[in-house]
Amino acid sequence: MNDEMKMVVNAIVDEMGKMEDRINKRMDERFEQVDARFDKIEQRLDSMQHEINACKLERESIGLLIKKIDQLEKRIEELEKRTA
Image (cartoon, rainbow, N blue to C red; front, side, top):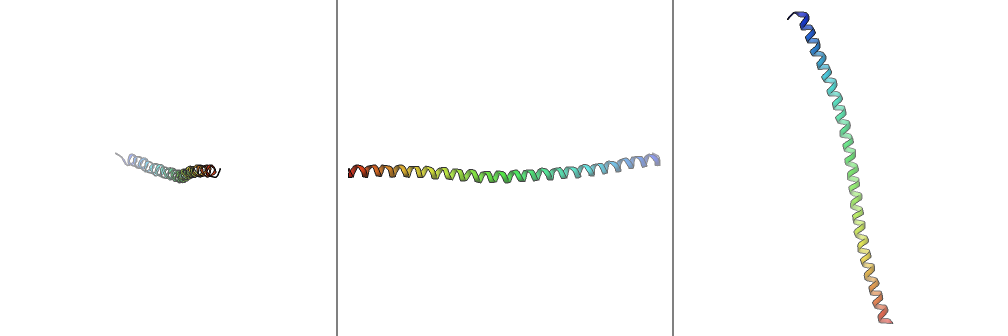
């Protein structure tokens, strides 16, 4: 292989290395963007889970309050019957 051919091959290999570096840099940037988006989504899911848990707790509390109201209404009815 002559010197000119070696220079051409080396230039091509160097250019391929530069191209690979640029591609890797772009891919790293893209992965960082995707990671950032996943982090935001995860934060939103955590927030939504807290909201869901709060709603469940509220629903259970309302159920207990309704039962207590029913019990008190029955007691009032019984008291009214006794006094009547």
